[in-house]
Image (cartoon, rainbow, N blue to C red; front, top):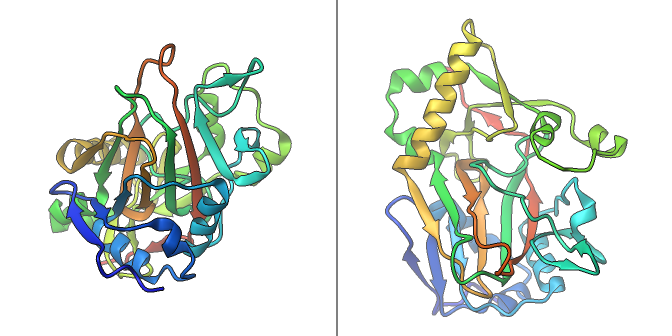
Length: 289
């Protein structure tokens, strides 16, 4: 089955994103092809599908169409019987949380601390609060296009070091990582300027709070602050605020996009989000100029 001919794409903001209408994701899954998904994600970075009735098996099948699933390190929060699905939730059942209640807060791109970071992330809103719990997105591609050529040339020479251990240590009341989890997440380095493997587009790549140092610089502390300044400037200039509705499905390309969860009334509202990730490639560095 080809991409539905009646599907339409309505931009969500001037910076990024499109809402896809007249489209049933379940029918698309049966086609066995994700070529057009890749094409549209290259153009819009983020796709939103409203009112999608999906079971866990549907979400996993969709994820596999985009590439190899990348299960989260914290498997204690995976959906029972489905290690590919990472559960984000404040719901407690039988005195045990069914998901991670504080995952995703703070601007970041997913799994930058992996040697092969996530190419795509998929979120499915099973239950969402009526107020709050928005997800904010910002385009690093737009920021790169806005930057001066001299700044770009300098950044192409630098790499960032990422540490999941340092990131995890910042979390309050988190249970200690197991040795297996530590071994799966050694520190890694990635270029700040990377090339998209499908479109060839050049853009910024900055992870978030797992970013701990700059390499390749004569002024590492100065450039560390410089990178963070660019990162925060991106969130102000080129952003989109997604207000969730039940059964929303979001798919985005992490290679040029950062995002953050936002707070909500956790005592009186229920939030249940299923998340999957698709393994990407080792980031391709831009050529030096």
